[in-house]
Image (cartoon, rainbow, N blue to C red; front, side, top):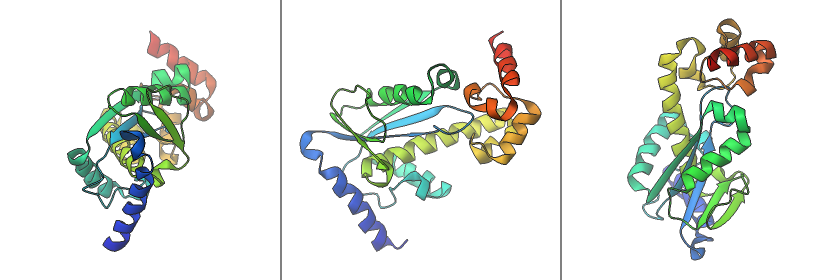
Length: 218
């Protein structure tokens, strides 16, 4: 995309956030990792200045991995406040993915002195301040888009570390998502400690999932 088009696109995202600025300090919040079979769900709550506008800030899914890494570093240098939250596979299995995501968002928000929270789709977090849930917020809000990039890159980096620890599952490539390669490895090797037991029974059978959980608890 040409620089002029990128500038116009970022201006649209900034203009959306500006509508809420008179209400106080505006933070954007998003998550990465609700859908994978393995690894944490990671959340980011972030307050971004209006200037300088980072022209590649956008929905993280619209950026290549290499571009996300570059923009992530720019965001870290620019952001006014950043909070990171996470929920482990064990927490996800215990309280379900939605409640685990909310818990991680609450953790991230607690680190940021904002009183207006623009949140990608999730509602009823019980935060201090006003919560505004926005469908497809990462494609609508500059702050949510920035949060989506930070959450995604943070989680991807963690999954690369897990790929070195558990190389048989292809985490370097699939980041824990249910690709054909990953599912075949699950069937062959069974789950590892970072798999979400509540997510994988469909692929390897409930009996195998239960046996793996019992082994991990011993």
